[in-house]
Image 1: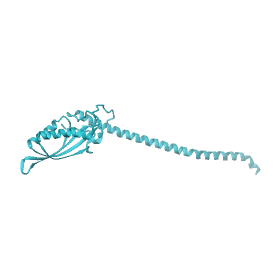
Image 2: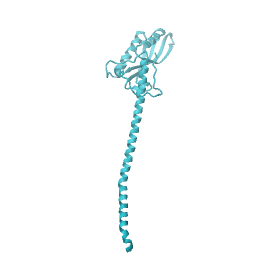
Image 3: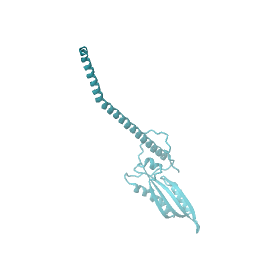
Image 4: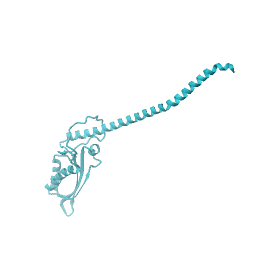
Length: 214
C-alpha cells in the first residue's frame, strides 16, 4: 500500500483538474448556448430586415413605374392645391365635373353608385397613400348623339378618367332613346403632387406598369 502513496499527489492533482474541467464546462455551456441563440436571433432579424427592405424596394419601384406611365401620358392625374383635403373632397371635385358633362349633354341619370379605392386597381394596390381612386357606375338615358358627345368630353377632359365599361341598349318603346350603363374610374393625388423621384432599384416586376389610355 505504501508503494502507492507516492502517486496520491498525482492522482489528487488529476482529480482536481478533472473537477475544474467539469465545472468549467458546466459554467461555459450555458454561455455558449446563449451566444448561439443570440447569433441565431440576430441572423433572423437581419433576414427579416433584408426581406422588408426588398419588399419596400418592390413597392417603390412599382410606384415609380406608375408615375412614369402617368408622365408619358398626355393626361395628368388630378392634384389638389391644398393638402389633407380628404377623399370626399377629392372625389366630389372630379365627380361634379362628370355630372356637369352629363347635364351639358342633356343626359338623364336614372341611378348612380360609387366605390372608393377598388382593390384590383394597380394605383390602389401599390400606391394607396399616393393616389385616391373611385369607381362611379351610372345608369343613363340619352340619345345616340348626346351619348357620343359625352364620351368625347370624357376623352377630352384634361385629367385622367378611365372608362371601365359601357353597355348600351335601345329603349323598347322608342329605339331613338338609349338606356346606358356607364362605369368610369376617377383618379386623384391624395396631396399636392410631389415630383421628387424615388431613387430605388427597379427590378423587372409583373404588374408594375399601368398604361393610361388616351
